View 1 (tube, rainbow, N blue to C red):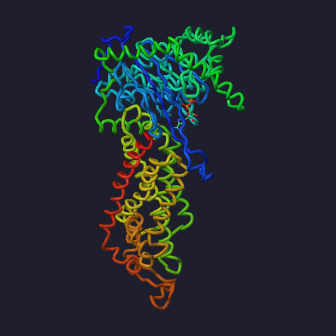
View 2: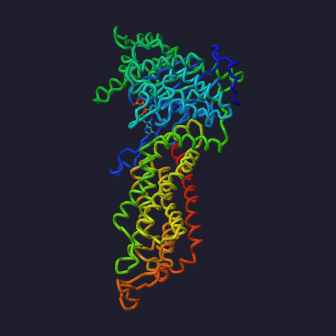
View 3: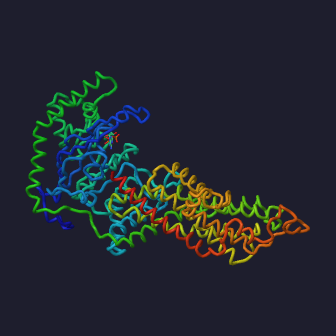
Length: 633
Ligand SMILES: Nc1ncnc2c1ncn2[C@@H]1O[C@H](COP(=O)(O)OP(=O)(O)OP(=O)(O)O)[C@@H](O)[C@H]1O
């Protein structure tokens, strides 16, 4: 089957340019009987059928509403037919587009899916949001044609008046929730889909805005598209807006047909909708299973089963199956209408994502202040505490310096961690969504984020180093200051990169926070050689220290500060041997005693320290590849 954008020349059974047939969709999951603390039942499993033999047929120009009470399987049906269902269950059945059965890898190219919750970047304007999406999807088009496309989609969704307003979020005022929904729909329309699925697009909106959204969707459907929405409690005025209505209960399709057919079908079943009642509410209530008591459950379940069997024997159901068969027979004359595919190459995508990330986060004033000032605030604490380093061993020349180096290994990774935990999860949610849309792969978003943190991290550590180095009086030499800055930069970046790596596989930021903090503490204990000398540690810890970046950073900072340093011993400077509190006259003696041969390993240590950065970036990439796998599971 070939992708073709000129499908308009082909018409389906009823003359429309595309059709979708869903046939016999069943989805079964296997669940544990009890919770993990009830060991006996936890190891037993039972099989639960979430979707049972769902079939329907639609053509371009039509909009279908899927109704049903909570838990009836509406979202699962949309997930199943758009190829987004996890692999933990068994999915059976086929989806045909223009009579051709879709292969697994074709689903994301064929359907656009608007999720129940909007995942958009808060600091971008509506126009920017859509322009970046257009660039990711249609880069091969000129800037002018992308602008025209964005403008036409904004006009189609009545978004022109908010084109230059930011999306906003919990802490930033932006467009209204109805407009946000429309931006999510517009982001999908940019890709020119023929079939659009929307999971509860009206949830959380007031009833007037909800109606407007549904009317807008019906207009979109009229422009030669198939629109399928799941919806809770539509108003009765919308009765004639939907071309088809599907009612679900316990994973089964109770009815699927035109609104008037629905009335006559239920009339024939003996359930006439009372006058002045909303037919949607009435039929959904009628077909729902009431689990409040065993008796009610049995009664309502047997009622819904009897309606289902009437539907399955009805002409509506037979017509559906016939329409699917007819479309299959004529499949050779029609091609699958894939979404427009003029996507840029992989490097270009990273570049676009980088620009989008920078633009979004550079408008986050609090975020920027936080990123640049965290290390400085830490430096203020240190300066307040240490005031000025002395060379007098009786005044703590050695332990103060060691304590300071220990802090330089501990705090910068933590500030890096805080940045990643605060800023990345929202980008991760967007990359999960846009990755499923086929716009790019998750690692590309990750790489863009990593590139964008570099200037912030460099600036933040430069501010920290410039302040603390000279204020507390470390070795007064410019080259050593620059070396100090270059070494401290790595722990800060490592904190952020390790956090990103863990965020790939762990969703909960609190767990990531705790986990990476503990990992860093363990790294300092094992690798720094400050709390306990490396030579005195058990062999296993000595070996482990080689895989900690703290080992190399610690040695480098110690050499940088202690090499060629001359110590004094009290006011009279009593020499070595006369006062046991002054064991060293030179810093080199301390280095040789605590980090033997460290002065000869400077280049090696430096290269090893910096090698941790690309190595951790690779780990991050692997982690996001694993995320891809876990999400598809
Ligand atoms: N992967 C899964 N494993 C176990 N149960 C699942 C899985 N996916 C869905 N379910 C269950 O299937 C049922 C249907 O879920 P679904 O989200 O499709 O319902 P819904 O009709 O969209 O509900 P709502 O209107 O509240 O969003 C629910 O009981 C849900 O818990």
